[in-house]
Amino acid sequence: MAALALVPVGLGVLLRHPPLVLVGALGVAFAAFARGDTAPEIDVALERELSDPTPDPGDTVTVTLRVRNEGDGVLPDLRVVDGVPAALAAEGPARLGTALRPGRTATLRYEVTAVRGAHEWDPVHVLARNPSGSRERDARLEATGTTTLRCTPELEASSSLPLRGLTTVYSGRVPTDVGGSGLEFHSTREYRHGDPAKRVNWARYARTGELSTLEFREERAATVVVCIDAREEAYLAPDAESANAVERSVEAASQAVPALLDSGDRVGVAAFGPGDCWLDPGVGDDHAVRARELLATHPALAPTPAGERFLPTTWVRRFRRWLPADAQVLFCTPLPDDYAVTVARRLDAYGHAVTVVSPDPTADDTPGHRLSRVERANRVSRLRSAGIRVLDWGDEPLATELERASARWSR
Image (cartoon, rainbow, N blue to C red; front, side):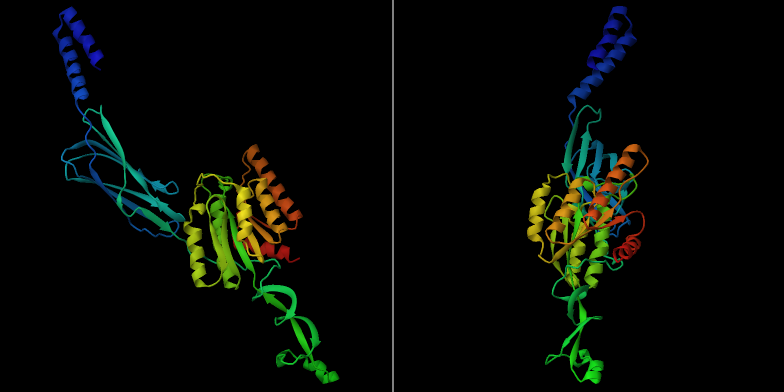
């Protein structure tokens, strides 16, 4: 600007035209002012407040950020950008531009829509400029007050999940080929001292005078580990407005866990992805609370991918050490690649009966999307050919899909 301002000064002198000299002098004066001025110091206090720190999914939360000038000088051009978590969609701009005198406070308000998880606000980006805009300072400052939004959905049981035959020694609802105390007739045997009178075959005794005992098919509990595919490859959705496959897998797990616990089964939770996400199989109300917290807030199951390095082969070896010998696996995965098929088949081959719940994230609006749909259908077919149950979950509610699958699997 100073160089350009000297041009009219020179022309004014050569042409003996005072207005040109005056215009050039003003430009030189402004350039000198801008060069000599310094950026103001950033001495502000930030306080954030959430209208509801623990909302339900889908609730609208109002975020209030207050900025107070704690310094002695005026901040002529102050700009503030709040660090909204990546998983939360802000309704309206989460930024503020203002001038702020010492001791005064400016307020920024915006709204976010709550989604499952624990969401931590990033530091606030603060930028201060001098009056001419030629000098600026910026800083990342932490805000006091509430900086975390925790959205923990309630666990709601779906219809009863059809389990495979791998069971524990505890009584439950899974039919076995073992005779004992149950509901369905299994066989008869010789009477033994101490057998309950209600299990004596009195009809045969009346006919032959011989005592015998009725055996019924025992029903036992199962140990089930619900495993969610949370790799970066699994964050797929048919369009920008739809929930991604990891969110749908967490939704399926949130319905499966209480359904299994209500049936007396031992339930654990794991994530096939970066980070150690593991909950040992257990029962009871306290265990249900721990499962709910893990599904809602564990970083490995965040609504957006973590971007951390992940070694799937190492995870499979570690997961096998975690699994109890009698556990079966409910694997929630969109089958985004062949490795998901490999994991399911390998766990099934190790003796852990596997059932796959696969939310469909594919679309058919382009040739590439149609090809992806065909590739995923081939993976589903390969798993079914290997004897693994697959619930191909489309747009219908999970309970509806389960009823259809149960009828098919029982044939």
